[in-house]
Image (tube, rainbow, N blue to C red; front, side):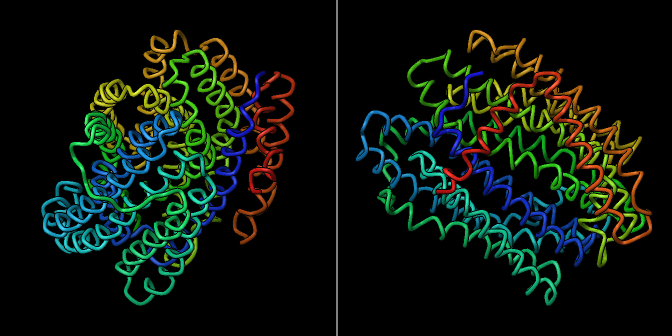
Length: 523
């Protein structure tokens, strides 16, 4: 088993460590919000108000830039053209600022039109629509700082500097938690929205000093510069691809707005809490590994080294599967105790716990596919093939809408979460099938063997977790969730590691090697 390059392993480990801390803080942020606002209609309005500006920001700036900017700057730096890299970076930095400012202004004007389209089910409650519009206008301001932060993060990662971008989200979450406690208790859900402005501004500003040391400055926009025109040509398909991804992610919330609230648990808020918990391991492992390998994949693609590109991407994918499958088993087997421990306090009720746990279990079924998507799409982006994910994703929107409608009528919010898992799995399988043509194969037998072995170990360990959790702690006691998670998680981890060793899951040695480099990464 060939190990990951040492620099790549250190970068992935550093980001994994920092992302673990950030995700823990992110969950703490949700814990605070849950205690103050529960799964209420006000929290549902906030969810819609956040995702509308975030969708537009990702489409116009943040997500598109991260896809097309890093490969372009990496090429300049690989050729030693540092002055040209700085000139293009300064040019684009200024454009991001002005486009972002225009986005904020447009958001203030168009919010009353956008929100009813995003959550048509809310129109039955005029007060809910009014609240969502107010929150949307506030959060649009935060999206300017978020776009600038994403750009600076991409600039630093293109220069193979990962430390500050990895630590900036910690600052973001700390500021939001503090802001929520300060303003949320005084001004309600609007205080939570204001906290996002403060958090995104802090995330941007903390990266600026380091970016300046690498030469980032504001510059005079030069729209006719060849690199800017090249980026613009790449940005259009990238933007379409992101639109497909974001629309796909949003389809569930669109349908959830029609699901009647039950015992104070709004389906939009329920799905948001559930997906936030499931996304935590995806962020810790998948995004960390995908972000770390992207510059290397881009360099392989620039050198037309398809064999190296395939080997790097598939090793990352197999390693990720070996890590994420037992996490999915944990989320399914111990969903109830986990949600109870995280959220059930303040105004977050037992009924909300049951609803969120059920939705989280359904999301967790698709967690391996959700995680694998980050690796597979980075291979496409390194090849500057934005069109294939767009075309496949377009089909997934239609499939998602159909499944959401059908399964929502059967199981409400849980049905929508299950539809998301099915669509995520189909999506990544199709992308892998098509990628094999570009890379002369995708090591299907090795990936399949890893999936089979780790899947068997994960299923057995999930059963062990459920049995161990059931054997300890009376469900009515306050300590029961913690005892169940400790007993179930511990027993399941031992079972998974022993079975993986018996089944010769070699990819775990790669993950272990990354962990052993943790000290070097932090230095």
